[in-house]
Image (tube, rainbow, N blue to C red; front, side, top):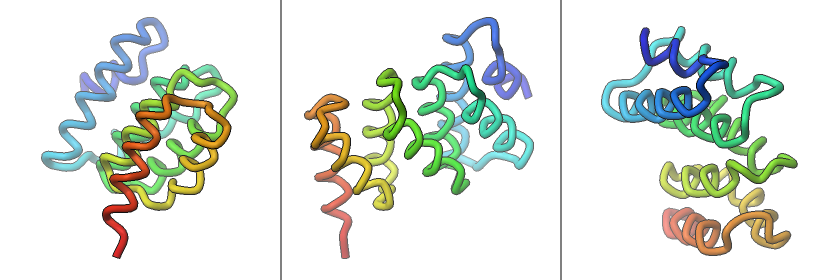
Length: 130
């Protein structure tokens, strides 16, 4: 509950980012409850949410198996603000989100993120192909 509240913090964005990442570790280990997933989705969809925090929330949701996670990462990759693109690209590769390959290719083509991060993610996703 404390991490969920910290992730929703409007006052301290650094604390919110750290809380979202800590929740991501919990999601990998034991999953997250519906209330926590809903709180993360609320933060991710917030109009003034920084794209780095949005990407962290999306990655945490994806780790928890919530489809809103992949959609959130897609929004970061397609968005105007560049702050979270590298984070989103890394998360997509790490989590095996193959549905984001077209978005990653578009980001790479338009040079909207670190080429190294995007290429690493694409290699990881393509290596998983059946």
